[in-house]
Amino acid sequence: MDLGLADRTVLVTGGSSGVGLATVRALLDEGARVATCGRDGERLAKAAARLGAGPDRLFTATCDVRDGDAVRRFTDAAAAHFGGPVDGLVNNAGQSRMKRLDDTTAEDWRDELELKFTGVLNPLAAARRYLRASDAASVVNVNAVLAKQPETRLITTSAARAGILNLSKSLAHELAAEGIRVNSVCLGLIDTGQWTRRHAAADSGLGYEDWQAELAADRGIALGRLGRADEVAYAVVALLSPRASYITGTSIDVCGGVGRGIL
Image (cartoon, rainbow, N blue to C red; front, side, top):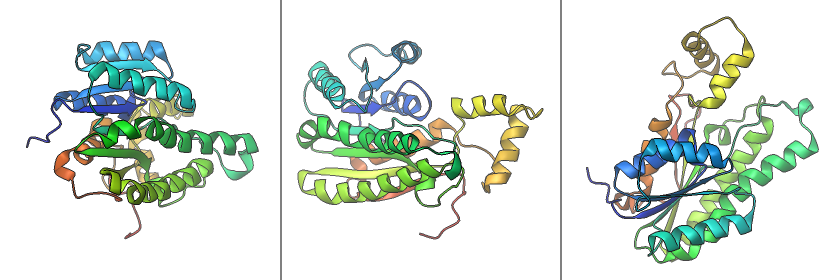
């Protein structure tokens, strides 16, 4: 099926690795023009080289989403580079903070809430006028199932994720009159670099596949494994597509059946 993304411009934050990089790759495969940013310029350059897309299809810049001025510079430069409107925005920058309540400082709370909320609000503020110029504008916030079922081992991240899910619903209502759809993709445990690092740090004596299966069983993942970044990217790209023109204010769980609720 043609998703109608060819020659459309999409901004993706946090595109140097993991879900962000997989989303950039999937968009390029659909013929889209993609602008992506990351905090680590060297890692971003290596990711861009692996993608193999020319400057007519891919624009990259070093940027921290917590810095509103830097985000505006990145967005304006991307819009000027490709010309025309911005058709999609994927807010993906972020990370998980593995701490329980008694291990969490006031600074941890401030940092986590700032990253999660500025990671959505700064790119949206910068891209909003370009999105309004599109005939199929779509925003996708990459979130987590933690937003719906809190995890005490990630207490700050769970709370921040819940806030972003609430914010996304509000934004869908606020921006509908401007022709901008807003949806969320809530991921479960995805096999990215952070899990390989945690496997190494755990020093469990298990190989990575066995450790991953044990982790999946502990977390109640019905499919018995961690997900892949490209499996999340599929849902993100589907929501960006003009074919999803009547979908806004909703969330899609990509979590291997870990969800225990019915809502």
